[in-house]
Length: 435
Image (cartoon, rainbow, N blue to C red; front, top):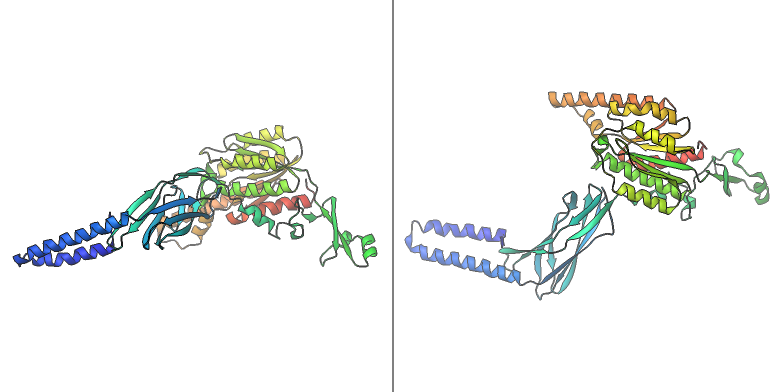
């Protein structure tokens, strides 16, 4: 039994005659009767609330996406002849954020009511929902009867895969003309013929097909597509620096999301895609291969990847890649440059790999440090924090310049731009025939 605000107000009002009974002894009996009546009404209200017949069930998506709002639906079936007011709250996993956390609902007689809320998981992996908690208000509005409906349910939280569909609809990343085809193409200076199309402003004269132009009596452009069946290896840093939170997710989660988007586009583009997860050593390795099954293997590997609170051994990674990768490949290394002492160990071996392969380093900017520098210091402590942040960012820029000096391409972007930037750079490399 949980008292409502109405019952507390009633009890406060009954306190007035109770105090008056101290001065007028004859009122004691009347006060006692009033108190008993109030308790009797509360008890009656509680019994009537208990008699309300409810059934509750939960509907979850097949899989949830980390860092994204996922819809959860509760179905409340009321089997009674009178309307009733309830408050509903679901028992979500501890690392989930529910919006809203609870809701007041009005249930009509003999009705079904759906309540939809959203949860945003902050971690990948397997989690469990608990029971559904419902508070039924009595018809007198004096008390709630709280009930717990068993609804234990396991759920898997995967990387945010919604970006794959967003990329398909993004003209900045892909050719919209080819949407719906079995393979994705990037028109450009490739070596394989794709199709003919009408000349558009901005096309080079060298791209004009003069024979087709003569046949159709209007300018026609020859469209080439990038070479397929090339080798792409995605390397994901799972060291301690990737455990830092940026915009509600760890840097590793941002990297995993972008890596999956890149793998999705590369597989659909006919390329061979592999994966290496590394920290103080190579934790997982999938040799480059083509096809949807390979994408599924990459997804399953990244699904269970968590940051290790250890240093990152870049030398061990690049030594293994030097042995395993016999074919010229695009190496997409998702890592962090905030720890200069650790990240500086990657410069020399990465430059050596650049002689045989095409390295591309991708990192997420630390938005919290940048925001700290934009604010006025409120005191000595914040001024010290700004000085440290400024030094970290300066060292980071210096390290990026050292990495880029050896022919290594760099991408350092905002968290929400990482996926699209990675895909665009991959497509640009293929279009220029660098591989």
